Length: 485
Image (tube, rainbow, N blue to C red; front, side, top):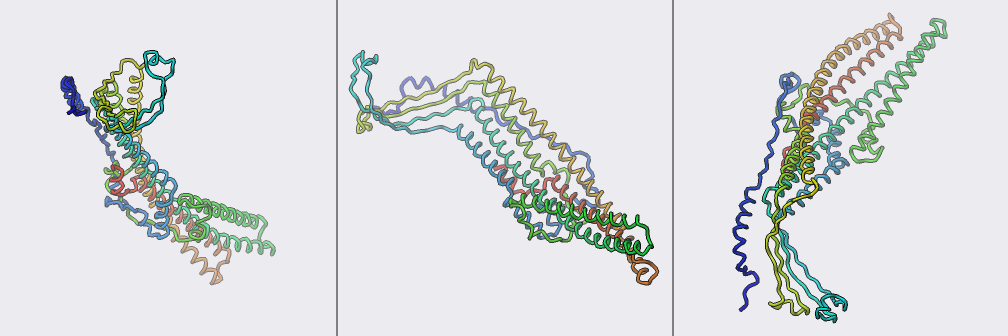
């Protein structure tokens, strides 16, 4: 009985020490040497401010405004925003790229089969040596395999870099989500403030119209000079111009919101076109501990993952200087007739290791290492820049929040005083001790102060959005698990 085709030859025993050494070296391949950078926590007073609390930040922080329309817009943005859809495709692409790198390190096995009709040229050397020129068939079926042994960690480091890049892409998608939701909230709050301002400005226009009409009547009766009437007409024109500007700004904000929701222009006119009250945040905002900022902001985690990938890229470039060992095998059946493919004597095979050692490549490996080292330096600088920028954004937003609170308190007190003055002017007009002109002026001054109060309220809402955006938006823990997946 013939021996099995898989029976190793006697010379195979000489290869065993080499194979044992190979697997031993593969076991010594360098591990992942990345250490997450330590993020210094600057001296911050966020936790000690009366209007900011260290309570856990809510994931849906915008719900503190208690505005159902804003809640609906946020949910719609998470579903239909184009930037988020693009970010999701980038995550899928980076994970597929990571899968390609993982697959390259696994044993490769393939099957081939073929048929060809052949004939030798009468002028070929083999015919001169006696081969026939008659046509013949050639049937072939077989298996081929190969496996590169990762002796120095080259493939492993490529896998680490690919996985880190996929994580960076996932964190980038979350950073995009935080930015999109913050933009939706900012545009919505600006829209509501603009609509409220337009409504108050219309009331101001009505008062200015009455004021101008009264002065014109007095001027016609010879009780007033022409200059006062001209000033009143100019003030009325300015109010009209401001109304047009506010309406144009509100229209632009509606279109900007529609774009954030992936909708065509004008699609939100019916839903948001009517004036509404200005949403206000609570007096105290839960912000969590400032020391957790580095783990809350996805852009910081993205920069860290990119640094991880760059470190692994340097390790892979270093390992590229060392030899590569590939195990390959080939087993096939070759016959002139298809029914002979199953014959024992139609078999042919080969197997064994192949060693590749780079000797000269014009400095390609050296420059590849230098490039990867520079990319690591860039990633480290970008990480430090991202962290520093995050702390600045948090500090600026917190200061804006407290400043807006103080301005609102001052304007509210002033509004009360102007309201009292308006009521006194009305009472004096009704009692006949004062003219209607003075009452109209008092009402106009009160409306001006009401606009200032609304501006302060809008500033508070905007600073709330900016603060939660700077703190990372408290993206859910499930997203972190997905990012690590």
